[in-house]
Image (cartoon, rainbow, N blue to C red; front, side):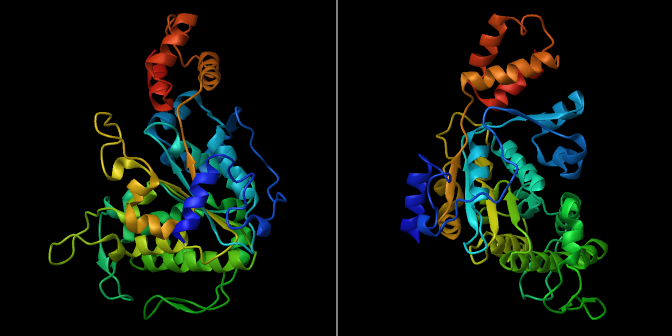
Length: 382
C-alpha cells in the first residue's frame, strides 16, 4: 500500500490524472463522463443564487466572502490545481475505488478556494456533495457533547451534526428529488420511539437528524452509509470535500468525564468522516485539504515550513489516506496576477490612483511575493 502511494506522489506531480491511471491505467476509463469542464487561466463567475445554495459565504475565506458581498458577484480564477481535480473527477467510475486527492501547499496559495471551486464543479455536474468547512470544527470547536447510546465510550456532537445535515440539505437541492428516490437498505432504530423503516427515502434520515438533534450524530453516519451504498450501485456520484482534513488525526479539545482529552477516534463525527475517506466504496471522489493550522499558526513565516501531506497528516493519518493523488497549490504566476489585477481595476476594487498605475501594478505584484492571499489583501487596501 505504501509503495503505491509513493508512486502516485512522484508521477502525479508531473503528469496528473490526465495521463496516469491512478490505480492501474489499464483498468481506468479515460472517457469523460462529466460534460461541463473548466479551462485554466479563465475567470469563472459563480451565480449568486448558486453561491447562496452552496453556502459559499461561510465556506470561502472571510476576505473573499467580504469581497463577494461588496462586489455583488463571485469570480474566481481557474488555476492548474482545479483543472487537475476536474480531470480526476472525469475518470471516476463505479468499477474503481474512490479516488482520494490531497490539496497541499503554503499558506495563502488557494487551497480553500480550489476546494470550493471543486464543490461548484460537482454541483454543475449533478453530483451529491458532502462538504465540511473545516475538520477542526469537529475536534476543536465542539459546543456540546453527549455519550453515544450505540457505541460505548463514543462521544456525540449534536450541534455540529445538525449543522452537517443542514448544510448537506442546502447544498444538494439541485438533486433533492434524486435523493428522495433513493431508499434505505435497512431499518434504522434511533430510539425507542423514533425509527426510519427500510425502503424509505434517505432524505427522511436528514430530516430526522435536523428535527431531533440528540439523534443527529447517528443520522450523519446512516446518511453517509447510504450514500456510499447508492454510489456503489451507480445511482449517483459523490464528492466529499473536507477542509483542514488532517485535523481528523490531530488534537482535540473535547474532554471525557475524567477531564482527560478525548482522541479523535473517540468522536462519532470524526469516525463517520474517516469512513468516507476509506477506499472501500466506488463512484466517488474524496478531496482533502492538508493545512498547517492544525500544528502551527498558518501565518507564521519565521518557523520552518511544515505543509507536506506526510508532515501534516502524521504517520497514522497518512497511512489511512494513501494511496492518494497530491495536488500542490502554488503562488501566482505573473500572468495570473495580471488577470486578477485587471478584474480588480474593472470593478473599482483598486481605489487609489497610484494602485491603478503601471508602477502600482508592479509594486502590488512584488510586495505580495505573488502570494494570492497577500495579493488580495494589498489590493483591498489600495
